[in-house]
Length: 166
Image 1: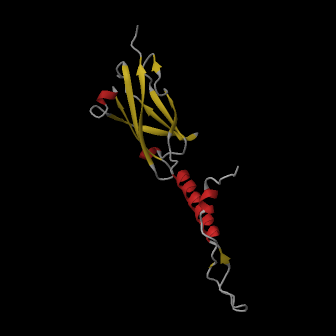
Image 2: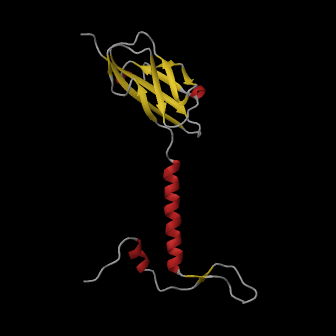
Image 3: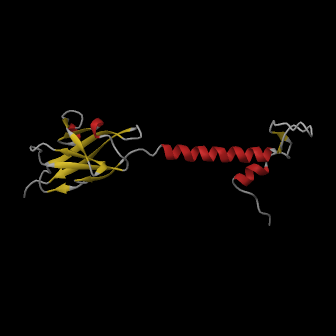
């Protein structure tokens, strides 16, 4: 029974026999044209560079996101809250934040009310917004557009429900 190589080992096994390549540096004393590099070495270095680039792009794509709210998403509350608190995974710029409320998901684009928000001196990842006193029972949509300190913006929404009195 023979063991067949898999993955990168399989790719490198199909590389033709090593042929000497040179880095381009010269050594005047010996007359050589540089350090010899095989195709296998070049292929392996290229794959490592590609993997490092892919890892770097994944890390760069991790921008601000909402991690917690009060009331929480999908919560059912007995009465309309006076304010909504939004916590993000990174610092946000309160002066550039836009937060709005809509009475339901079906009226999301039609009846938006822009709200004022403020940061919290003790936590730079927190935004606090005062809600209108006349929120109706049923689902409430809180939308937000936030600028994080890394310069990227996010826009999303959360929905909670005000329970109808029994």
